Image (tube, rainbow, N blue to C red):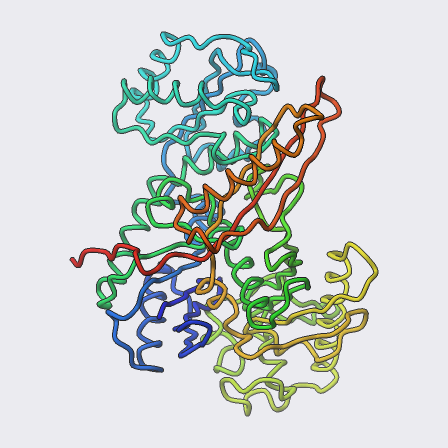
Length: 522
């Protein structure tokens, strides 16, 4: 048995799974501190289906802790950005495109130093170790606790970033270091930004990891704990302490993976209607299609791995207004639904009230909405249907019919037929697809860097990239015999001299649960 938990903006969902069977499910309200909601969900599972805590082999959690921290600007460490690239890159220093508010929260300390490589591995300028020691002295004096190191074309050669870290940590022993070549992709500013965000979250990651561990231990569960990544795979707690940014958008990813699992489809669109947003994504080989361009995180441009998800402010808690014509959302009562919605005695008209009035859902007291204007109810449902059809059309890459899987607790708002959409599938357990996606997640490995490819050695280079991705998946905890390649992409870089190509390879495999070490009890 293993447990999957997904923390959303409105609800925290949990499922108890044995093999491919869902034994129990529980939906509780997300709490302000998140962790309490997880404990409540575990208690709800135990109430729904008594189980022996010692029989649980693993717990998988998809959490919004870290992205919320960036959006709200709280719990972030004082962070410095050290860029290796002088005499180049002076025109656009670190933090150049950051919102002032977020830059001030983390300190906005930036340093330009010598170093960096050309695309083919040639050195721009050698590292100046005395220069870096001076940086270490300055960040120590300013109380900086975490540093993001970026170097020009570090995806080709990351040696300078690693050497710079050795120099800085020798002078400031407790410094937390994040490397851009381990986090971002091609594009110096976006990769650097992603690394800075990760560095700012490192201290919070330590606190969250300890808090989640204590929560499980208090419930008598000492099984290994894994967090969901935004590519549909898992990472263990030690990896999460170093790379918290990898959890961003793990919620929509879990829902898409859960939709694939419940429907049995590997190629489809998934619509996840939650309490706050509706997320729409496309599945390829059972995994979310990845965004091909930079992604904005709280006003900051980044280019680390993220799913291609279209989110709209439409969910079960969306506020319905009629003052200046009908409008739905994007604001939502969120986890306060049970206090503010009409069916719970509140004073705010939400889409949940509309669903209850239309007989689509049984929640709260239907008598409190029985007098809602029928025309209003019909207009809201038509508006929701039209908006979802429009967004699905935006995500399509071809006119060919594509099955659509409908999941999420708010999916009762969507009718069984939507104009312009092919087959609409609402699988069993669809309201818990996000937690199921976390529970059945696999372990992955990825390679994404620039290769100089001799025309006579192309197959050899691609095979090497595939094998490296497989090796990374096994090292991350995947069972060797279960690992498969799910994506290989080769992009010739025509604007660079020579035969340079960006090669991406992804491999996934089943998590080895039998040999996973159990956590020591407190």
